Amino acid sequence: MMELGFENDIDLLKKYQTIQSRKTKDYKKFLEIKQDNKNQQPLDMISSFWDVIVITAIDSLQKEYYEQVLKEKMNQNQIPSFIPYVVISDPVGEKIGCGGSTLYVLKTLSTMFGDDKIKTMKILLLHAGGYSKRLPNHSTTGKIFASIPCTLGIGNNNNNSDKEEEREDESKLQACSMLEIKLIILIDIPKRMKPGVFLACSDDIELFESKEMSFNSSEDGTFIALSQPGTLDIGVGHGVFILDDVNQYKPNQLNPCKKFIHKPSKEKMKNENAILSNGLVLMDSCYYFDHKVSSILLNYYNQNNPINCEIDAYSDFLQVSSSSSSSSSSSSSSSSSSSNPLGKGAEPNYFEVKSNVTKFLPHLPKEREKIYNFLNSSKCKLEMIPMSPSAFIHIGTCHEYIEHFTINFPKLGFKNLIFSEISNSISNNNSVILHSILLNNLNTIINDNSVIEYCNFKGINKLSIGNRCIVSDLEFENDNQQISSSSSSNISIEIPSNSFIQTLSISDNRYVTIFFGIDDDLKSTTNPKLFGIPLKEYNSINSNSNNNNNNNNNNSNSLWNAPLFPISKVSPKDSLLKTLNHLQTKQNSNNESQQSYYSIEQCLNEKDLSKQFIRRSKLTNEILNLKNKIIK
Image (cartoon, rainbow, N blue to C red; front, side, top):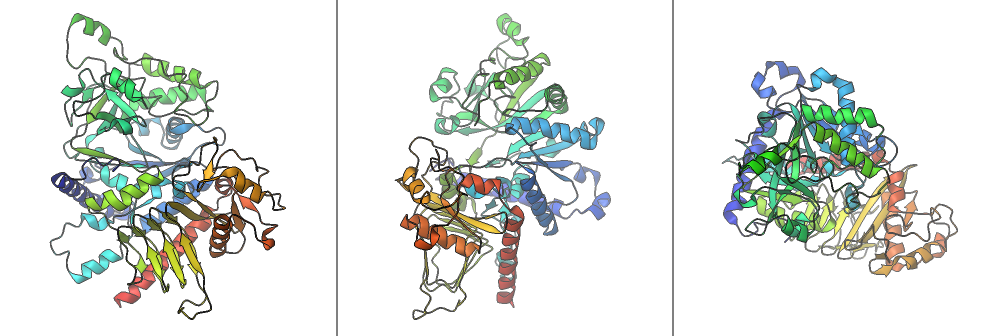
């Protein structure tokens, strides 16, 4: 198992289900509030939700896509429609990281609402920009709108849920996206916090009870972070909090934090006394900061924009701030050190760290030092709330995606089949099928632990999906769907085990199907391999095609920028067949001598998210029509 550390604790699993069910029911109350009846609602009801929800995007195309999806979700009553949603794309230029995005968001909101108004607002900031190189099915459409295998029906803790009509309604419910999950998880937060910003990422799920949580720090200029216990293996890829006595913390209450360390080694965690008696560490997930901190960060931005390097919202903000007082001793020595706003543990020793950025630029250390000085001179503090019991579920890699969707989530009451139409003959095992159609296929085999999402397979002679696959946005509709064993159509689609495959829409009405192994390292530049075959062998195949559109990159140094995948100007179906033929046979046919190939990187640069949105919406409508016919 990976990050769910409670697999065999049935009582704890039931508790998490109960918490999530209660939060979902509370969330659904806000779906009843509309713009036209907002003023008729009790003031305490309106004030207990966010004043604005901000979602970041990597570029203007992703911003437009996000806005399309948000509009659709409001129309379908999946998210509250009485508050504004603001999508802010990163400025054109160097990648600025989630910290740079935070600064840019604060500036944009200040311009949009005015400084005085902003100081009264409770803002939810969801970072959703990024290339998602370790989970590419979200590279174009974003992790924030990734479908999660549960519906809003999970909140209907109704004793009559076995009624036939309610089961029919449940079958028509679409999967929640990560956005809905985040709003449900954090449903209690705006009720408990003062005006300020609550910052969260879009690739993790936290399970915890927060009904009685308090964010009321006694001092302004404070960061308040939520913390979940995690293993050392997980801690090395996240942030870890250090207290004066890590085993004497107060669960579910504010604790002054001595120090925050980002992506530490196991040895560093041990040397810093960060390890609890049970062998776990207190990890970061999401955090709040008040509007005094907002003003300080905005002041830094106003003096140093435009941002042109990667600033991290965790390592470059939280490592600066620590408690202004020791949580235990009141000796003269600790009193002396506590006058330092950084506390006795925080150190400005991370300016030269390169591990948390994709591109280390020479001026980055100087920018980190400036941020440190701004927050340090303003005596900003860090407090944290260790949530207990709680679970931290990270969904940032192919393996995590498969593990959680097919093994761990069902233990929380999540589903294996959501808003899909499949033939009765299909044995689903423990694979997950989301928003897909698998009908009229002569022979369909779906092996264990695979995730199938936004796919449309109809009228195939044989469809075979191996173990531990991620299959996304594929389309194959045979002209003669009512096939038989004697049919002239003998097309088979076979996806081998441990594969990732997705059809992307790109500009000029073209399609590219990307296909690789879930164990392949897309970012590696050291002898990269595709399905165990050295990349240079595929490059030599593609170089034989007389084509100028291969990015002149036959010596590509990673799978991410290697032009491996054939372009189709015909259809998603044609794209799928081209890629399977090309990569599975590892050769070009004679009529492919002029074939163009794209890398994943090129696909993202030329993505057509409007087309991708239309394809998914069309599939959703087709599924709904099928369900309505069945019910009638």
